[in-house]
Image (cartoon, rainbow, N blue to C red; front, top):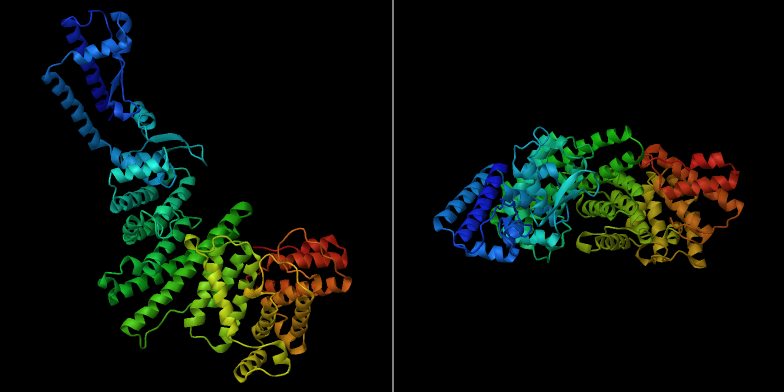
Length: 637
């Protein structure tokens, strides 16, 4: 490429010298000893492909202003044959360059990243320029380097934001979008370039800084089904283009599979993307993308979608186990990062599982399913994993929405007994009730508050049961609920006790949709309700039922705290709490039982940090022993 560029420059310089000689021959310019001036590529291509400083360099020797010399050169009138000869040689240079280097792909790749305000590392850009180019073995030619890094006006070349390495980026996102439009870069072309980058990355990832893995993941995410790029959203101006990209998701999924197999994806970032793309394409997006295509809803298509989702869940579960083993071997900030990555993978796997169940349900309705085995969503397992994820990231709305989606799936369509339905409802409602006092982010896609809708539906499920503590104590429950209550008590299932208490707290406006966010203080009537609930839970048969259950003891701890302090139990800092010795002793006993129940494996050996904090405070107040307080405050996530 360098030779072609230099040849073109030499020809342009010769053309300028020939023009001077013609002007000197007809007397327009004086004859003098002038040197051939350098030729450069202008920064603004509106000024032509090449520019020369001949007029400026020859001004002193010729004794004339540069503008007069430049006009004389233009008026010299070279022969048509001379001009054509130079033009053909320059055109040949361009063609030879195009054979060796793909400047169009180079610019398009940077534009694709640029519209999302992302950079392309230097080695990756060179992969696009020439697929087999290896700059680590053969340094790039200085002339080529100069052209790429400083002579293309719409590109900026400099240090990356989070790395000392260098990268290319478009001057701004708008210009990148305009470039893609003017060059009519199709959805197929965009997907093709992305797949080529993934293919090259799995082969040559050692040539690139490790930070590019996350940059590439971000790029794939913005191209994908849950893109946060405004133009790709439901009413965005690029929605049609984005749909065309999503129709090629199968190609992207296959590329991601190969990348996950070949690349050391230690943090499961690419694995999580694979699960997301598979779930969205074969699940939520399918009907929108293929609404008018009858073949997309054939029995064969349904079978393929179901199998793909099933295989992806199996892969994700295996990947999650490997990530868990890696987490056990790490510590500090890296441990926290990997734990967050694992929780993200669990969320995506849960959603994938939900869509597997939905697709199977549709399949059996359309094509019959007598005698066929159906997939089952193991809600106990989902709840355990996502509850622990919530403890680690209580502000992450993605986790709550995944849990509530899974609950609604099994509650409405799962083959559950009455006991299971009430147990799952009570345990899930404990988490949804907490949401009203939490500042939760990422509450839904496209700024839609899916989380609140889930909470209201869970509240509605709970109102289908009508029961009070007084009904239970005086045996005035309706016959159906009475049978369920006594059966669960006899089977030592504490969630029936907690459910009755939740109903009481809801009616008092202490929990649920009736409570006010940010309203920390309880009035005397509400405090009395909390005391009544606590007393009910500590009655003989109820106490025996709940004392080894973490979730039930957690509810008891909350109501005792609220009745004693008059405030809700939240993570708000700077609260002044004044309790007497008996109250602190009661809190110490209950919080200790709660944390012990958690350590016995109920929730993966993890208790709510608030419960651990109450235990530590109560231990300090009762014993004045800071060492005991420190030991009781330890927890592992």
